[in-house]
Image (tube, rainbow, N blue to C red; front, side, top):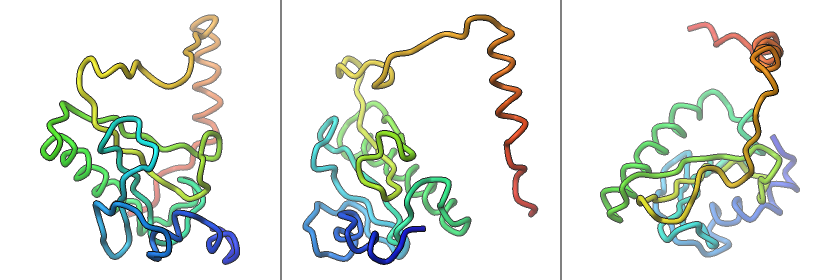
Length: 148
């Protein structure tokens, strides 16, 4: 979580508070969705928690399900409302996160729209052993799911 000063300086917090204008698409008790001012494609929505949360690892457990559920609804809305064939859904955590407030991008997609794969170059593992080593390192530090 961020300090009160950081949240006050956050443009997404200002949008949530109505201090900065935005085209609001979704307005709910815990979440706000609005059009990205610099969309990949027209209809590109940013979904944010009302509460200032820096990045995905900081998201409180009580907001996880509402965030994913609203993301699903927005992904359907770009198809049903804009005639897109599907969507690209993504979030950045710190690196390439232009605003330090958790946000999920829901971008309408249509075959042949010009967006190819991810926005960065791809690489390969040198061998199956190298891939296994990366998998092992991740699995070793992965937190278990919360008790239910």
